[in-house]
Length: 319
Image (cartoon, rainbow, N blue to C red; front, side):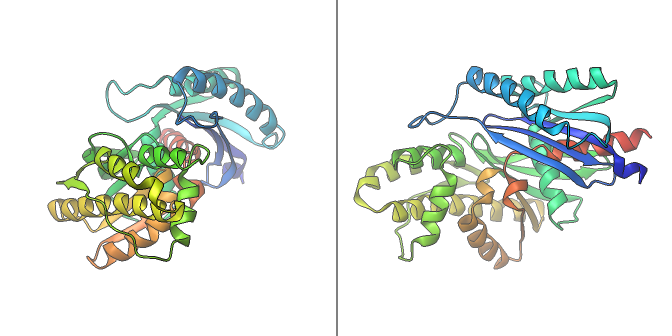
């Protein structure tokens, strides 16, 4: 009962989502709250300064709303995603907003303050929600700003992460949003294109993809799709673009799976929440005896659950 009443607050301030979670020491999710940042119609993103301002407002409002929900719990620590990746020099202004808020909360409450990265937060949340149960696996991080293939070795209280594949230009999420805005959808556009692709029951032609030894280019796909976007339905275009992404990822996984002798692949990030992409990749990879692990949408998209769980692990290691 004592562990159930003690919680770690997790905080994550990504490019487009403000997230706060509360996890008890039994790793049960007590709170999982998120607010999308607002992007003006027709825009394909936010400047970091605008995102920082919205995060500041969101964090104050969200924590005020959550106080009554966690009044019966003892906050023993705060864990925040303070940088994009777990590598030296990794920095993005939006994450400093979350860090400053977390530092203030921990100081006022006189609790432990732990730091992690946005990427580790994604991995931990997805690992928590799946039954992958492996200490070594490939992880595909597909989001609005990132498309990377990671070789992950799980440690007692974290991960060793090596980038073994990635896009050399725009990310899968950027490609989806650029096409989606062109089609007239609100940013972010992933859910619209996913629904369209699922409704498209006709065979579509394949675009030329660029994928070699785990590394991909999507700008060529973007140019090809923009040359035909006015000639086909939104459903058709959506299916074509998602096919191009999943075919590129599939080709990269096949190469890297063979290179590193790994048959387990975990998918994280907002793009991996696509039902169309997940269903197709699960089948294609299964045919190659590769196990694909997709998490629920709420765990795949930006969230603070991973930060909270990492904080719990760190706290317990010190007890």
